[in-house]
Image (tube, rainbow, N blue to C red; front, side):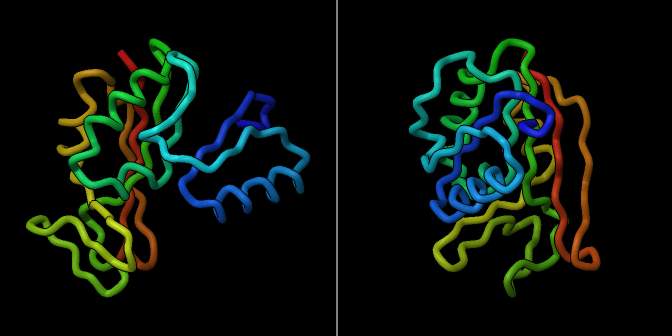
Length: 155
């Protein structure tokens, strides 16, 4: 977005991720507002964003935080705003030595929680407040890892 001239923001829990993003922005002469933080404790104004892009946030949250996360996304996003969700798919076969199944679609590894979503879980969470415009499944590492990409619009 910044490359196309849009005012852009980045928030990540990881200081290292923000440091790398700042280096990338500097190398590409881009103005991006980047900060380390927790989306569940965000300080952005209501109806602030036209677009929110989640790459790897929701799938690292335990289920007990999903409703809070959803309410924050709804509050931050303008009416008719767009939301893009990139998340782990239940069709992932293995991750870091863990077998993923529909019975156990989450793992805890190296201090990190990871959830592997079904399409229905995402629909159940978002469909009341968002129209799902498009869903793509992307496979990597010879089909061993799968990701869903959901394009949605706030109702």
